[in-house]
Length: 394
Image 1 (tube, rainbow, N blue to C red):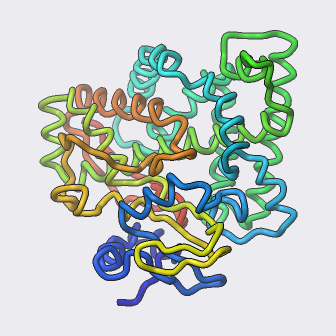
Image 2: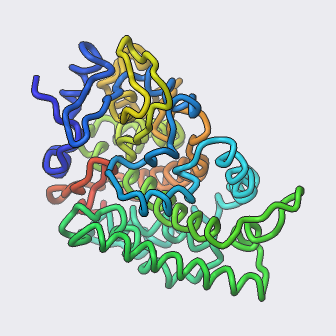
């Protein structure tokens, strides 16, 4: 079988290459993938989890966590972002930002998120684009709430996120430089927020993050700016694409939509199954820190290692009937929020809460919802994204 797991045009036209993933899991689970440079493609659940949980062996810091090759100057700047750090520096940074994402803090948002969903659905009628009118605004409203920013800022956050994540998609950006420009605009926005909260503290995550922790530690300006950047992108993209990908999946599996309509409380397990099935973040990159063996293959120090969550989440050794979409699947040990370890998604509870409430409200309020046009996918091998999904409410 011809293997190309990073062809963006394939992702744009057909979605993730699940046929190739399945072949690799069975025949070459740690596979040398040709490229410039070549890399080890890790596709089996057990191996993805191993890489994720051993930052000492597979570094996010040395060559960053994203797939693309960057200049040393770009790498030096991006290393300041929590996503691209290893313990112990990552541990210090995460302990500071964790204060804004405690279960209690997130749980307190439930009614607010329900109100947002109802407000969004109240404004919808007839035929709409599910992405721009439902899936995208939901996490943007929530991010504005977390930041204490006016809801009117959501359009700016949406545009910035699209330009950064979609730099290889002609609908969003003409070049990677466009993405870099968007990042600089987010930094300026973060600085403005910080100045406002220092002068006038509020009950929001920005104020909390600017205050010293119990040990007197604080985020410096660069750390704060980069965390806001991460929140704007990760807090938006994961939920947006899980929601739109989940809706498309339910259209493709009408029996599961009927189950959800009949029993809307299934939205709790449906949220996890949607994340497993869609795997909104397709891959992350690591760098081997020493000569070692993974999945029977000799990995050299400095080798590029890429884990594919979309493949691991359909590993039949872990998920019975893995190729079946089941809104009631339980247990569901998917790794759509990462394979554990230092970089397990900070906002996973928030994302699942948003998805649960959204699909519960959709099932209750629009049981006859139907797809009314073809979905358009994002041209990206990093984010499994939907750009457009026409639906008719019912």
